[in-house]
Image (cartoon, rainbow, N blue to C red; front, side, top):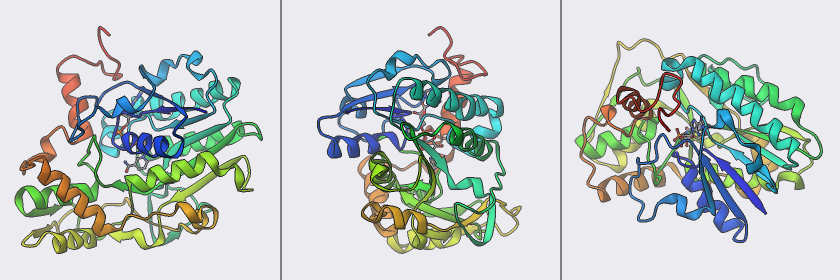
Length: 349
Ligand SMILES: NC(=O)c1ccc[n+]([C@@H]2O[C@H](COP(=O)([O-])OP(=O)(O)OC[C@H]3O[C@@H](n4cnc5c(N)ncnc54)[C@H](O)[C@@H]3O)[C@@H](O)[C@H]2O)c1
């Protein structure tokens, strides 16, 4: 079996590759990434890409279809991965997350790929705190990033067929340790603040709801999606990925971190503009389809693994929000150094 993983050199990718290596020891794993965060290695003794059989450094916007020869499954993680980057590079976000993300499955279908798995996001529910949203609930994307995911799902659906299964995994907000750690994610940010300076600074009033999931459990959900032909749910499936117990208010996440790391001061910005991005999500469909692939890592375990990982690398940067642990900062620096152009294409490649 040959599996292509796009965007494997980001935060989620290394966990996915480890999971697939364990589940499919004989598979040929192929990575494809533009490499924006290639040198943002946190702790790995071994470059995570050594675990794939082939690694392509290229832009998904000019995807060479010959790579798809003999590929059975495509796991499409490549993309602009948060709201701040989406706001700063709005058109690029639509180009990569939407247009290129529809071009790829068209080529994949043509090449005889059987299964296409798209890393979608629960952020497409937008402002949705009154009741937990199911896959049938109306979508309300509030940002360029969330809109790109909605457009892609919409245009993926008609491409699905018996021979070309499409699974859109609407992931909760990720958390947990990774060989390429990001700290621009709510729980990771709180643990980093607690470890570095015994301070958690909540930028909102703390009331927004966020469902969370550990990256290892995201990887297990992807593993399930590859095998999901055993379930009789149709050629196209969009499913919320997380668990009902993991719908948290941001202030409760901060309190959970302070419980694991004592002596931490939590500051809530009571004057903050309300953060409209607040959503509760219903994960019953995922539970009914994938009982053996439900999230297993607890919130406390996620906090502990982040704390232990950060301490092991001697993390002390109280100003980490200005550091390379934030995806937007890395791209801004690449722009300032003239390494990428305004379309985020490498210059003088
Ligand atoms: N982390 C989360 O909370 C979360 C939640 C829901 C969905 N997702 C989705 O999962 C996917 C992976 O997320 P992540 O946290 O690993 O993000 P990330 O930013 O860490 O990684 C994304 C990877 O995509 C690559 N990439 C970007 N543009 C590319 C292009 N034009 N061509 C080739 N490669 C390109 C980047 O170099 C990077 O390695 C994304 O699609 C994201 O939207 C993430």
